Length: 327
Image 1 (spheres, rainbow, N blue to C red):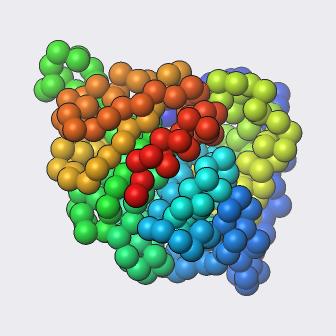
Image 2 (image 1 turned 180 degrees about the horizontal axis):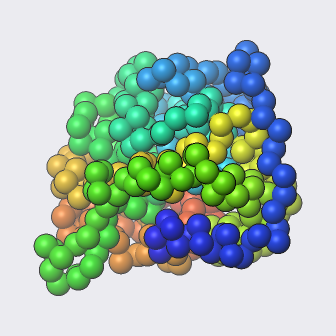
């Protein structure tokens, strides 16, 4: 399913569910970090990385450091790891941050790119953690992590990756037949300008930034178990969208600026890596794992129950795998 088709589904299916966008809050008005909200993480702070104000939480204080990297999507945040942080913090120092433009991190009226996010992750490891880390990541966060680990192997000791998006298998019998998103061809400057400079962007954003829009997306694309989509969860996503300029990271995503190909990076990795994949992911089907395992036969694949975020839906299984794999 392409990004434009996702937008079309949202627009056609949710016009009746539109609600007014959240009232903007000044970025400069926020002086101190809000209290941590992830179980097991006891501290929070802001760090300025690549000129962006990045919110993060940490806790545990024993064992080796683990950085948790969330995926990209409107309303996403480090809160996606709420079912996992307490378990990991029992034996590791755990860090979880919000990408620039998302949730509690600062947001600006700019194009956000994969290159920026890769640089932010590198700086977070160097400047905030200060030593090599194990990475636990999901979806596009996995792709950024793969690139960081390939380009800077001294920064990353291990990786536990869920549903990476950077591979696309066209023909399982023909390695040369793979089609994958490249850094240049995926970017659509004209579409970004339409989103940021015409009625189209605010129209789409009014749908996304609404209770109906969030519920539609969570129920149909994120969760297999629809009972997990509660009013409380929907409100967290809406809260993550509050504030000025929170539309620009999603606009950048829809226009392809946040996509990260990994076909060239993945085979170069030397770090121990565990892949987990949900059996019913719509955006990144399990067939995407096949070329990854072909290119790195040393990597183990574990299947979990769920759709887009199996570490949430099948948390007990995921946490057991993490406990056994991470050292």
